[in-house]
Image: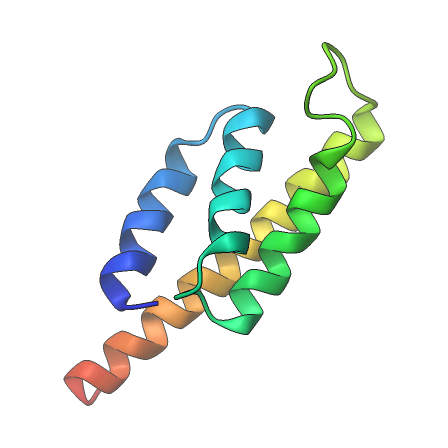
Length: 92
């Protein structure tokens, strides 16, 4: 996944306001062939957490809180990869 992809995805993550949006973004990354293994693993954890409850009108708060933590971890993995690619690209 190129740095442009990381930055685009980070922007989308910031705008994700609902668990359905979070689930959609995580699913996209989990299936992305260009995503690194660490990104795909982190995305899979989000997808797995929300998979059984995403279509319910109301989900257990504990499950949603767990999904939020996993999504935050996913965003951090993407952010770190984006930063490391910038360092390599600019030799900082």
